[in-house]
Each structure stands twice: as C-alpha cells, then as structure tokens.
Length: 267
Figure 1 (cartoon, rainbow, N blue to C red):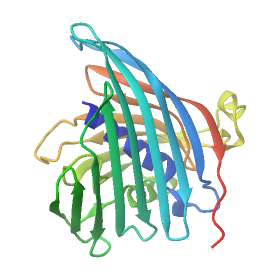
Figure 2: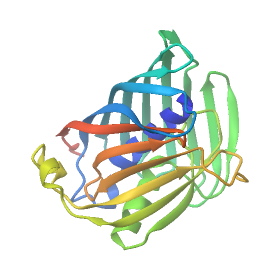
Figure 3: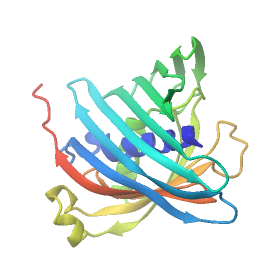
Figure 4: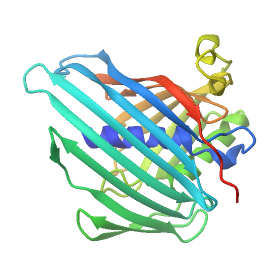
C-alpha cells in the first residue's frame, strides 16, 4: 500500500506542479503544504486513523522541470501496531518530455527501505524507450511505445481539459516503484469556478479549474479494476486545492494548508 501511496502522491505532484508548458502565461512554479488525514472507510478496512503532512516544491530550470515531494504519515490499525512513514521523492524531466531522472527514499518506523534511483529516456514522441535503475539493484526495462513521463502526461491533461474533452488513457512511467509503465486513466469533470474561501489564502487559488479523477491500474494491464484512484480539483494554473486517494476500503485526504509562488528562471 505504501508504494501505492508514494506513486499516487508522486502523480499528484506531477499533475499539480508540472504542467508549465501547457499554459506558460498562467502557470507559476510554487511550494505547497498539505495536511493528511483518514477519509472514508468501508467494510473491514482495519485502518483506524491516519495523519501527517505533505509538501510539494516545483522548480523550473531552463532545460526541464524539477519536483520534490516529501511526506510524513502515521497510519493506525485496529489489529496491529502503528506505522510511521517518511518519504522523499525527487524528479527531473526534460521539457521535451524525452528524458527523466528519479530518486525516492523512504523510511518506515525509522528503518530505511530500499532507495529507488535511476533514469529513463524515450526514443521520440509516441515511441518506446528504456529505463535504467541504479538502486536498489542494476536493472534495465524496455518502455512500451506511447509511454509518457509525468510532465508530458499533465501537459496533455491540461490541454484536453481546456479543449473541453473529458477522458484520457495513457501509459505513464514515474519511477515511484521498480515496475514498468502503468496505465492511468483520467476523467475530467465540468469546469469549476473559483472558490472564494480558498482564494482568500492566496491569489494562486483564485482561478477556475476542473474536477479530475485519476485511476491507477497495475502493471499487468489485463486487470479490470484500478489499484487506487486519485481525485482532486485541478485549477487552470496547475494548482490543486485538495486531494483524495481512494484505496477502496479506505481513503487518505490531503488538504491544502499553505502555498507560495516561486520565481521562474531567467534563461
């Protein structure tokens, strides 16, 4: 489950923070802080509580986008001990969408898990490519044709939303796990007008957007049901007000607490 949480938050980071070239006049790099809590539970979930914080920082370089996503989360269970997780996920993606570097470090109850680090490249738009993992072991995978990295995926998502389309299905590689590309489907809802209460926190929130639901399917693409889903209100400047990650039996909420704009590079 925790790898799924890292991937979902990693994708949220990308969806929230790496849409720059989709609408350069509107998008601003920024740093955002969220509080996490347990959402709805269903059936015999076994989860009794969850709490923590999450921070996203997006930076723009002249040649690419950088994202650092950090979170600390404590999970409480009815029939087992609490689990405390700390994760730091850092990525860089070329602005042409063809090169990608990733590094994830995670600890559980103070013990380091395997670090995941490597780089990937595509042979061209809509073509396949390769990913080379350096840690936790040397491993090379062939990326299938049509694979996108997170920034390119989000650019497509923003473009489709602005064009009035409401469904995208793409293969995405993000480096959050040792798996190959996974299928992510996106349903884009009706346009949402600015929220006055949220807008009081920052001018960055005084923008319209869309309700977006992302479904993450396992690497085995014969699966009929997603492993989990991520819902959010994605604003047209690339900011998300809030997020819900739904695992079926329970969900984790991420509520935006603070946000600030970061400077753009002088290239």
